[in-house]
Length: 269
Image 1 (cartoon, one colour):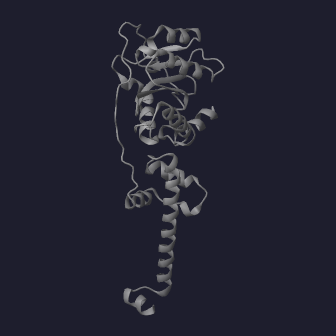
Image 2 (cartoon, one colour; image 1 turned 60 degrees about the vertical axis):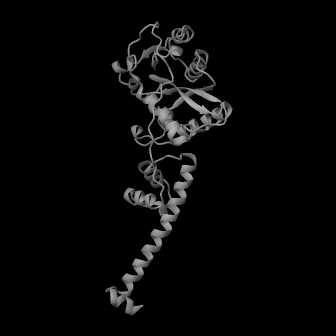
Image 3 (cartoon, rainbow, N blue to C red; image 1 turned 30 degrees about the vertical axis):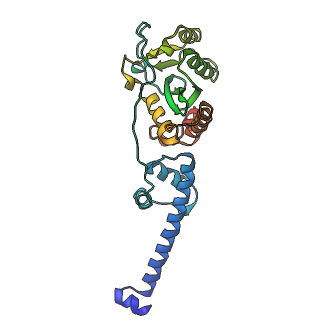
């Protein structure tokens, strides 16, 4: 051993220190990979930035790792997430409906239940499409209501709306922001909004990106939580959507929320 150290210009002490460091890094990397697999069991598409924060929030010292080191470790183990972007329209504008202004452009949203963003996204099943009706708090990004159904119809949108209303003491003055889909323009739906004094706000015609938060959440649920794949049935879609939304609300960190979860932000206010 002494001859080897002399050959490479190391002292015996430096050699053993280097060896201990390599052993520590190997063990740490194994522990980090195990914890990443554990996190991704619930959040399959969570990326390096959020993984780094989640790991450093844990108390175990053996999981402390820099973001660059984590990136390199995941790259070596083929565990980097490949993002996939996709946009599909699920609602069609009702040209006969009343035109409502975009109220979100006129107001600063700085607390929960000031504004709800609302949308419908399709889910593929072996028997055709299912539809996920979502209502999300604009400030906290918490999904406060959802319904999964086998067709597009105002009654399912109304059901999701009634569920959202039941979560607040007084819905009066809340901004309800959606596109011009026929479900939201229907007489039945508008009657519920009016009777609860909820303010109707809508995107411009064919301006889906005026509802970017809702569209972003659709993408998160599909890309990160497996709702974008073909599901066995509407019943399976309901079960998976329920699980995905629970994990999204309670475990997924948001950069827009200073890397907190929607429930953390929503419940703190």
